[in-house]
Length: 147
Ligand code: HEC
Image 1 (cartoon, rainbow, N blue to C red):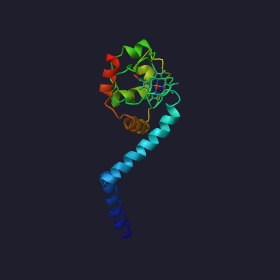
Image 2 (image 1 turned 180 degrees about the vertical axis):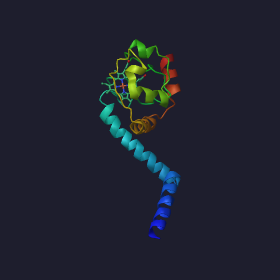
Image 3 (image 1 turned 120 degrees about the horizontal axis):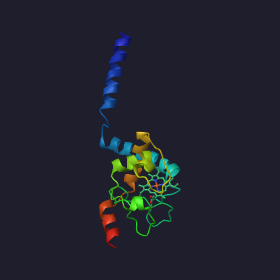
Image 4 (image 1 turned 90 degrees about the vertical axis):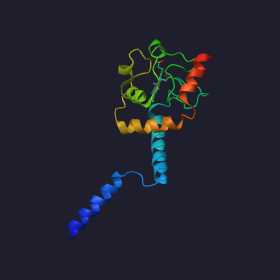
């Protein structure tokens, strides 16, 4: 009998876990946890080369407002020809491909290879990148290329 009840309880728990966030507060909490994890990963994997604020000194191009931004459009940054001429837009899918294998995705880039293949790690970093995308990236790159 106990076993049957346990199985039923377990099934109910699995069902509730699979139905996702139960409230807007939970959704906001989950998202904040992802952003915090993403920030820690960004600090470990990206920050030494990429400022997260456009005004800060940065070895690589700053990544503020990266989502939706045209590749190679930070003013006065000395991009490789490969990146400057790529004509791509940094969608989340493009950023995943870049994190996974940037040198394979874009031969000739001067960013050294990073190989972040774990989708959960990519999800967290993307959540953080979304959180520092406070302006429409397309508008940002359009303004930059017009100046
Ligand atoms: C060792 C330094 C270094 C590290 C670490 C690094 N990058 Fe880069 N990144 C660069 C350089 C340099 C470029 C410019 C590449 C070029 O011009 O070909 C670049 C370019 C980029 C671009 C293109 C930006 C644009 O304006 O088009 C993105 C996106 C990017 N990196 C994301 C990341 C992410 C996310 C991480 C961490 C997972 C990371 N990078 C880690 C040095 C680095």
